[in-house]
Amino acid sequence: MPDGWSGSDADGDVRARRGREPDSSDGAKTAMDAVRAKLGDCSSCRLSGTRRNLVFGEGDPRSGILVVGEGPGASEDETGRPFVGKAGQLLDRILASIGLDRESCFIANVVKCRPPENRVPSPDEVEACAWVLDAQIDAMQPGVILALGATAVSRLLGIRAPIGQARNSEHSYRGIPVIVTYHPAALLRTPALKRPVWEDVKKLRRLMERGGLPRK
Ligand code: URA
Image (cartoon, rainbow, N blue to C red; front, side):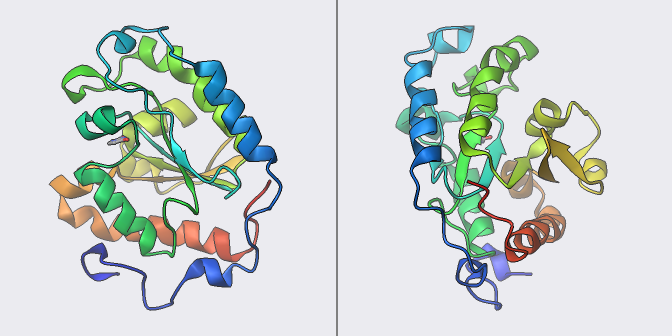
């Protein structure tokens, strides 16, 4: 387990070993840009009334790896970028531990606008935003989805089991393998979750090593 999630693990850079560089075709990128354009200055739920910036997601849509969180917090709302606050910095270190960075995956959220006071998005807000995440998945056709925390798991898998239970089973969404793990914010609150998260990201690394990524 990497010490304090401080960088790549001793096995070195996984990207260098997965034997397949991201597809140079711009299909997924063009498709993702089209989703962004379609979303525009969305006002389809109440969150649009309190947001500063819509947080669409960022990274490489051709990478084959989609990371899904819950929704923007204060820093993300401020910058328009996903996972840039404390939890995001931890996510960066978790990704780095398996040789990934923000440009070797795509990071998105269940809802694209910040729920006030960082509350959990309500079912109607999740529903209003559902087509966007689905369209992002269609655009990317990822080879794997990493679902961070209960909101992502419930949105993608329709299950409300505790993460500690859900992470022990195999899941898929529209035929795409879904790896379930704790949200980095939970890890900040409960450092003992570091070991299970490390086990979960190793599953992601194994999938990468099998060479099945990217899909597009
Ligand atoms: N938490 C999330 O779920 N998503 C973000 O973008 C930031 C924090």
